[in-house]
Structures are given as structure tokens and as C-alpha cells.
Image (cartoon, rainbow, N blue to C red; front, side, top):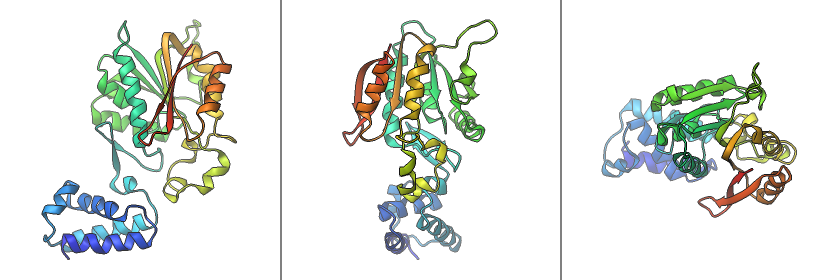
Length: 288
């Protein structure tokens, strides 16, 4: 079987299984099997696949046809130029979250009294904290998550990107581990950044299988209306923000007005609501 034949047959197979963009998915899986850039496949259409390569591709296609995410099959995804390992313990980073990270590092780079500090609340794979640490080499990052398994993935990703020494990984249920210490000192940061769970609980069963069955529910479930974590953050994050600090959060489709109302009720000033690549309101930036 040649590369071209494999692409054609595999594309047809995935298409019949209801997988979106079956040709692209096929090419990415085959490129992973052959350990070559996807575009290089087009220069190797007549190359014959070895039996072991055919077997590996077939297994990957079987898994993808069962709607296992491509990123779980290959083991990683790219985020702001970093290779981020993912599995069932962490949310697969979405492209729009790169925009949140970009807003974060642009702000940190302009903090007038370095070293700047930032808290990534609900870090998951660690992708946001890693991107901030890489872009702002003098900044000190804290990556917080409830899940010990997620923090394990985040630590590995930070080590791979060479920024682990500048990120503190903190297991905490909400703000519990940020409470004032014995001397009453409250931990504060220049930037509070988060991509919190924002899917309403009742909508989770309706999500695509790749999300519903493989992303951790705790990283998706935002409570009855999807806004539970925004209320928590709006009510408590201010105590952990330095003067002049910023709050930046990603949110879901159609939630912009409700989140603005939640923030303003807690005396936040909403500075900006930014759109994602598809021109949907996606990121809120606020201050006290």
C-alpha cells in the first residue's frame, strides 16, 4: 500500500464513521506513524508502507473511528509553539486559548516592577502557565489545579519546555491553598488568568464524543448554568490581585453579557471583551 492509497482508503473509512475533516485527520495520523511533517506526505505519495507502518496506522484509525481525540492518539498537541502532552486527565487545549495566553504575556511583559507574578487558576495541562513562563522569562508563575493527576501532566509538560523551575504547581480546591498563612500574609499576583469550566451540566451529554467521553468532566462542568466558576472567581480573586493587576478569563459562546454582569456585581471594571478566531466573544479582561 502506498502513502496515497493509505490516505484515500483511510479518509473514506473515517468519513463513514462520522469523523470531521477525515482527510486531514488521516494525514495527521499517517504523518505521526511515519514521523514526518504532514506536508511531506505530498512528496512521498508513491512510497510503500512497511507492514509495521500499515498495522500502526490501522490501529490509530480504529481508535479515531471510536472518536478518541487525535491528540490522545498521538499523545500531544501544539500550544503557542510548545508540545503539550495530553491524556484523559487534562483538557485538550483549544486554539482560542492561545489568544488568552497571548493577552496574559503581553500584560506581564509590561508590568512596571518586575518580577511579574501570575496565577493560572485551573491549569490542567499547564499550557497557559508554560506559555507565559516562556514568553516572560523573569516572571514567576503559579499553576493551580484540584486534580493531582492533571498537575502531574503539567509538571511533565513544563519540564519538556524548560520552564519547570519557574512554575510553582499547587494542588488546591478553589482558593483554599491561597488563604492567608500563619502571619496573615495573603498571596497576591499581578495577573489572575483562567480558562475555567463553562459548560452547563445538562449540556455535557450532548457534546461531541471526543469531548464528552475523553475530556475530564471536571474540566468541562461549569454547574447548572455554566457560570459557577465565574461567580467564585469574581467574588474571591480580587483579594489575590496586586494593585494594578488584571483578571483574564476565557468563556463560552453566548456567556459574555452574563459574565460582565457577574464581574460588575463584584465591583470589577470590565476593560475589554475580545473575540476569538471565529469572531465570537471569548475573553474578558477586568480590573478592580
